[in-house]
Length: 161
Image (cartoon, rainbow, N blue to C red; front, side, top):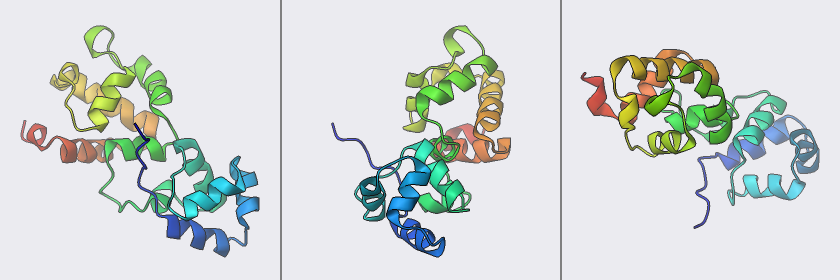
């Protein structure tokens, strides 16, 4: 199964790179990828890993959100993780100490389900949900209301309760 291309505003990368006075080769060296990968990002053929997205944003003095082309307030839970520069395994490792053990523990499967719009039954109970939101906000470096907004966009039925 081919890897799903994550949202990425390839035109923004090209423009910001040129504004910074960098060649594809120079940006690649700063980010830790090949010039061919930068060309692929700019052509929209692929998208950078969360770590490389965050590194490019830093080098280009912008945000991962701008590079991804996601308007403020429309971030998904997966976007928040990506913008923090984390893959799922890294996010789970950082979330785990803040979440309950047992059935509500953090796993890559649960995070993938949540990011794919499938509710995680172990995280629906109010106090557990609140701890998941707080942990995500802390790990992703965003305010809790940003996580809640993204969560309720994915699971509107939960916003009423």
